[in-house]
Picture (cartoon, rainbow, N blue to C red):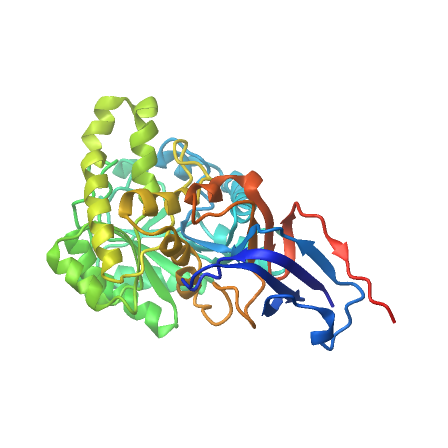
Length: 426
């Protein structure tokens, strides 16, 4: 048995309730068994001989966060082609390292938004077996894309199937989705719109029909699984909502009709705008591609539109989650908490609401709301201790030196605090 007592913390519990000072959190094995003030041994019937006490002195204690748009197999690449061309063995090594970076950044859970081959599936299994260090995962496989889309990168005479599987028509989509679920994926990613970094399939374009999207969702529903989509254009988002897609990535260019559809279905779906992709590309893209090429993407206007639409969705109660499409040279792994800062400074969320999006909503997208996402009795002990108050400065969550504790399932991934064994007098 393992018992750990965090004393005198500033509690942000993830529910959205007002924070509390001088709060203790008691962990037994992998479970939070109590949250309150002045917790002590006489209140419990288990043996305290090996318990550890950690004095927080007002440091923040909060739930671990969820990164809802994760690409572990994207390894700080320059071009999408780099992901396709990299040998799968090197891709696996990079993904293992990225899983460790992710959890050490305070994200104890993640939702994959596509991967090379079966890498995510294998990593998730190894993490669950205790053989690798990493977050709780919902795994994905290769992206499912229409021919001529933004990941259709090679001339027809030299086709490489790396990060995507090309499937055109309802039957091909069904066959591909079935094959990915057979491999053990928790989710399937469908590229319903284009992406404006591509010349041949821009973000405003819709690349799959409603029937093709619906075919993917039907196959997912038949297996108790879910579909995650890349959908920037208004029509692509409408296809997704009508078809019953569960997680919609981006949703930048929604019109009023798409907005109303998202609001009407807010209790069943999630929106993950991947905002840091736009921000970081605008910040650093010219260094890699030149200003003219960056301007041609239209990302400056796209960011303004995304910010405006995410603000509308947030105010309407749609669950908008952090997850920033990390994994390119200008948007590297490790910066995941930037999305919370964007939510506050650009979208207009309160710091508390941004934290709720990363914790409580994170547990909902992970399908574990009864087990995780908040610091409450009976929940898994997925916890962070932060040296500072993220409600005063949300950017503090990006500072790894300020993350004193990262705990997953009651075990320390990182612990920079002094702990004192409890001395029990017989």
